[in-house]
Every structure is written in C-alpha cells, then in structure tokens.
Length: 588
Image (cartoon, rainbow, N blue to C red; front, top):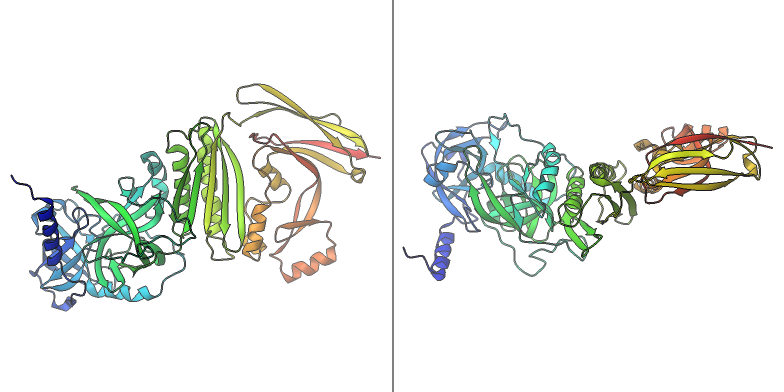
C-alpha cells in the first residue's frame, strides 16, 4: 500500500482546513432546530487540524440546565465517534447544520449506553457568555464548583493535565486538586518551559511578534500554571469573533470572572473508554487571556497573556549541579498555594538527587508589589517532615492570599531547597539551673544536654547574668522551640482579622516570628500585655487602655502572657520538640 508523500499530506491537510466552517458562520436559532436534521461537528482527533464527524439531532431538552438553558441532544452517527462516545477534550466542538452554527458539544448524557448520544449547548448561550468578555478581572476570587457525579447531565470535563511533575508528585496532590473540583492527570505535557525573566507578564506569541490564531474546532487549553510546571485544561474552540474566542460549551471550574492564560494545544491521541474517553495533549504557547468561566462556556481575547505569579524553585544538592524550576501560576486563592507547593514538591522528591533521608532546609521569599516581602527559613527532619512542611506552606500562603485587608497576590515567589547531610532531630536529656534563687549581679548557669539522631551525647552551658531590675520578681527560665515561645509570650498562631487594620500591618505581624529551628532560652515574668495590632506593650496605664478600647475594642486587646526579660537562641539548625520551665527567684 502506497503511503502519501509529505507534500501530498500537506495539501490534504489544507483541503480539510478549507472544508471547515467559517468562524463567522450565521447562527441557526434553536426554534428552527428539528429532530432528524443532520449536522457535522468539528474537533481535533490528532495534532492541530480539526476534522468533522457526523451527528443527527434527536431533540431539545427545554430548561434542562435551568430556566432558559436548554440542551440539544444529538446521536453520534459517525462510526469513529459511536465507538468512543463524547470525549473529554471535545468540549466546545462546534456543531453546524447547513453551514449555520448550532451549538457546542458539552455534556455526556449517559454512560455505557448502547447508542452514543451527547448534549450540545445552544449557540445563543455561548453568545451570551461572549458578551461578558469585555470586562476582564484582575484576579480570581471565587472557589471552584464541582460537577456532581449523580447529575443527569455531566459536563465533559476539560482534560486537566499536569506537565513537569513526576507521577508520584501528581498522585500526592491529586486529592487536594480533586477537593477543589479539578481532576488532573499526569498523562500530559507541554511544549513550553521556564518562566519569564522580565516581569510578571507572560511571554506570548503576540508579544513575540507572531499573530495568534485559533479557529472553530481547533484545540485550546486554559492554563493554571505555565513553564517548567504546567497545569492546563484542554478543550475545543466553539466560536471566534475577531479577537474574541469562546470554547468548552460548559464551565471549566465555574470561577466567574477570571484572568487565565489561553494557550494552543497539540492533541497526541484519543484514549477510548466505555466509561469516559479522553484526549491527551501537549499545552502550547500562550495566545491570549480567558476572562470568563461561566455556565455555558469560557471566553476570552486573543493577544497578551494575563498577569501571573512568577515562581522559582532552586535545588542545591549536596553533590551534583544546582538546578532551578521556573513557572508561572494563576492568581487564585484556593489553587495558587497548591500549585506552588506541587512545584516545590517536584523539586524535592521528583528528581534523582533531592533525597529526603535526613531532611532539608527550605528558604522562601514571597514578594508583594509595593508592600515588601515575607522571608522564611525552616528545616524539616526526614521524609516525615516533608508532609508537615508541605501542609504548613499551603496553609501559610493560603492565609496570605485570603487576608481580609487587601485583594493582592505576590508578584514573585522564590524557594531555595538544600538537602541536609545529617538528620537535624535531637532529643533533650537535661535542662537545669545551677540554682533557683539568686541575687542581683550573680551569675546562674543553665545547662542543656541532648542527644543527636544517632544517640551521641552533647552538653552546653549558658551563663545568665542576673539583672538588678529583676530583684523581687518571681521569674521562670524557659527552654522552648521558637513557635512554642511565640505562643507563651502572647503571639497566637492565628491572628484575628479585627486585630489589624492594613495588609502592611499583617505582613509586619508575620515577620515577627522567632526562628523555627533550634530552641530559645528566655527569662520571663508573668505580665498583662496591652496589644495594638498585635504589638504588645506591658504596664500600660489603665486610663490609656480605657480610651483606646473605647475607640476600637477589636483592635486593642489585653492578654495575660509571659514577658521576656532576656533571651537567646541555641542549637541553630537542629530540631528539638520540648518545652521545659524552671523557676527563678531574684532577691536582694
């Protein structure tokens, strides 16, 4: 059998493209649609060129998706599609009858049916969503809405694929993404890599001088992350009106107003299944911005991509060459922390030299526009410490993004990961004072003894010079990790929104934590602390307190806590999970 030569294959592709319906095909009104009418649906089976398959109109389900939201039901008469049914990734494939645009393939009607059918969103509903495209959002605020598994009509889910992640990392994050209505698979890829080097604007085909193009029936991807780590949902273009593109025929995640990268896509193949067939694809270059994610479609504009958060994750192995992952993440309060954490996880456990046998040091720098940065440095012990660190990071970044003071997102997040040569966990054997009663000017010795993870014994002595100002006070000497000492001295792990008045004050409060490694030794006394936006002042006159609390009781608080009179940090780079308190009385 003769195989077509490349030139002939090229002209065959051009011929198929010429047969495709025009982007500005007129709309066939829903009331003119009759059972038995035959039409053709355009979609990409492989590569980037749309092909058509035949369908026959079965009828219209009036108000099926809500008042005024009907669903067109068609039998998939084409033998190719009858075998596989409606395919996840065909979402948005345009339906034409007699050269007129009818709607977009969007819903799975049934599973395991003997004769394949599919639901189509009417053209008028897609046009309604397109009219909202002129009002893009500067950030995402809504939580994703999940599609019920028991619903009579199930939207054909976009093919969300995680590129740049090992299967182990993808599996680790699958439950967290699924809880937000996003079912992602590691079976996908990306033709792009790296994050932008010059500002938060994504490099796009438009910015590079190329004219971005998409056409009805072509593959399109909506990305939540681009670069070395990619998370994108692939579907099909339904309608193109100048620079405006409408796709999917159903919601992606029901986010409402959004600002997400619109990307090209290259379909590798279709994986048929009796339960749910799916396209697998590579996500391509950014060619525009999706601005609406609504019930009937997603829609946006060709051109520049949206503002995103630039993320860099640097790994410095004990032996080997340092490397950096660079990617961009969409600005969405629930999804952003998890996507960033997935990239950090990939850097730690998704490579050949990022072992966790002993633990690792994680440095992070989160930069907000015109508001400074939040910098952290934390060490974790062994593989079990990874899960703890991962959860802490997600919770911390989520709290930053969902703060009640300002609708803001970081412009840049960077991480540095260093595997540790030895396990940092240590066990406390002894903490004692040379005496519990002392006079002003005396020196009290505090001795701490501990064992490292291999059982080797260590000891250190600290001299406490007794300040004359401590005379007559009943004090305590406390040995505790930084976080425990924060709580003992009046800094709660969570800060009530009413206590602060600005995002700048929120950042300042977050920066005031003690180091998370090592231990703090402090001489403390019991005190009643008067706080203004979490800044504590001891011994505040009652008259001032009464005036302040009368003006704003939520902002000004009084807490009974321990007031540090002296403190120092020991065992930097070690992890000790113990809190010990010893009494100290200073006499004349």
